[in-house]
Length: 150
Image (cartoon, rainbow, N blue to C red; front, top):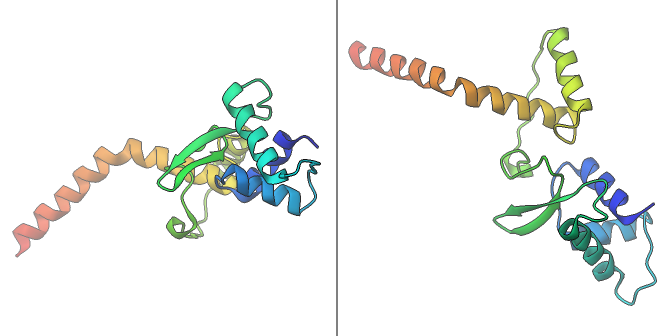
């Protein structure tokens, strides 16, 4: 398996961006890739970064994601708002109509995000952004009602 493909599969499975050195170390440790280089982690990490920069061998496509901790490697659809850190995540269970679940599944198959859960979160964020003015108006109405009640 080529380094780029192995890195892509690792990132999809992980669901979050990683440093190129971390990707290289994991790929070497799990035997997905090998290297005869004197410094295999550096060699593989450099290959991943070079592929992204040059765009020549960047298939499947990876992208640089900038974070407070530095530059990481992720999928092109990821950014810091769409891939929260583990400490920013919460698990929520909801029941949704089957037709909505099917639409989310189609969006997940289109790879809008790395997983069904991430696709659901992405679509929810987009919907909340669109509904923000209505949410603000309703909250202001509630605050006004509370002020008048006291």
